Length: 419
Image (cartoon, rainbow, N blue to C red):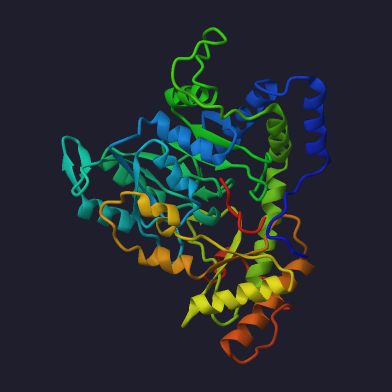
């Protein structure tokens, strides 16, 4: 593709720090790991950070360390990358899905509350599923596309019903909910550093928490269950090889030095999209509430109106024909082929989730994207939609002044959003 879906932003500083590690002779469990964890915790405002080899591993360790397993359920969203549900399945627990907010595409606290009232009974100090008998242990909100969920009512529900909260902030590094950083609003938060993220370690993830016990257990679990304070080959629990190498940590440190620059560059690309896509019939743009700051991970538009899925297909085909990468994003997890064997109880419709899954398109998005590339994408979107939807051609808006802020905007390939 002439314009890729994503592209990592790696410079000379990253090469320098990685090269230092190569020359040091210590490629794992060295000083860069501790430094990366310390500086990342400081950046997001948490007491502890635990680096692992992927966001998926980070989610898995949080579920494991919180004691969630067979006989348990976790309330989450189906509008996410599959890792958000897989981490629950790994431990023998079952995801219970609530629907999303139609405008924000995040877990809807009102629907979470409705699901709890409808499907669970309070018994013996815990919520028990009326149909399956499984105990609800946690809520796992996902900050979809870098926009924080409405966390205040989610935390209130968790406190009321004695539930743990694990934030999937894999797409939301730098996002804020009020004065707090996304990922620091629950018992633990998880970030991912795949190459399309706001910062990258090539592969990698991070757990953040203020819970000393949770951090200690996760550090042990990532390294084969090793006892950190005892002999080299003493293992106090069943663990995993989820370590993050010194090379990855060095790359992460260089990216963290540049994080404000990287986030600002992505915001400028998003502003360009908001300006150039404004006013195109049948296309809805991201729309953010004033109490939250999005961290721009991807730029996703929605095709709306009659036969939206057909128009979306034509848009995707047209963009790819022009050498512009794009992707449907996200397919609903509960409709994935492998989920047919998961014993969801009860099985209920998720209309907003399924509507979003049928209408969203991720456009090319990365920090080094040029204004010429953005204009080419937007011109193509406008022309394809006007031709395919049979609407009258409007004058192009490339010369319009930018909108004053992202809050005024209206509502690789195939691997976007990997944890």
